[in-house]
Length: 292
View 1 (tube, one colour):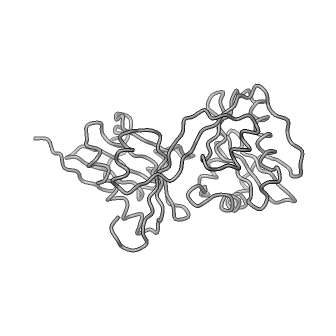
View 2 (tube, helix red, strand yellow; view 1 turned 90 degrees about the vertical axis):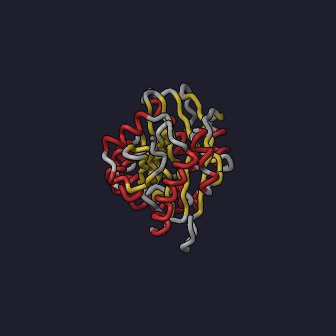
View 3 (cartoon, helix red, strand yellow; view 1 turned 30 degrees about the vertical axis):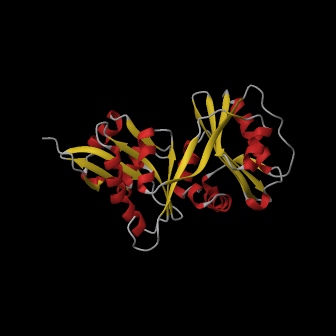
């Protein structure tokens, strides 16, 4: 007789080999791109991961990134192909959600990459669509002229970490901010990480990654007090020239569909909507002890 019941537990009770087998053998695996390798932070931050057992078989895994500014993102959602997702996902969430609540997490987010099995589970666990993220891109065979203006653009260094954290906090809402650990990883792994200084103070930055001959602008931040002054245009044009000099053929970027300021900037520089697009699902966790 097949055991159809589930048991959710902390992931420290599952061996790394079993976790890797689930992640590589199942078709129902949703992951969020991250500066750290998934296996690294699964090993370093087990408190934010729960696994699902069906008998003696590892049947599912739900993991979130270490919380930052009261928010977290679901980082990995994985289920064995033959389990009932409508039963298994709520079991995992009911095991992980109260832990987040106890640690003061107030917002949980998920970037939906179009997997129908996961999308069907989210409303029943009180997740709702909060915003849409779209993808824009343009070829780099012709780079735009660099706008004139004040400020000095240079590569970011380890000494910039504190001012970059302050810039990130000012420029983005809590769930889009980068914790210090991610910024450190970006400083070492990004194809291009530059800052713009004005009177010796960092007022803007960009982080770009590469995949073979394609580049992706993963972050463009301008301090709110200095927006509308052309800093975003200058640092964007600069990174496009840097990418072109390195032989990269295209540059893509993601932004929220409602972010009109960003859309105007990217369209001014020849970016066009290319897809894929994503939905951001969110859940607000109450501060009291009410059940999630």
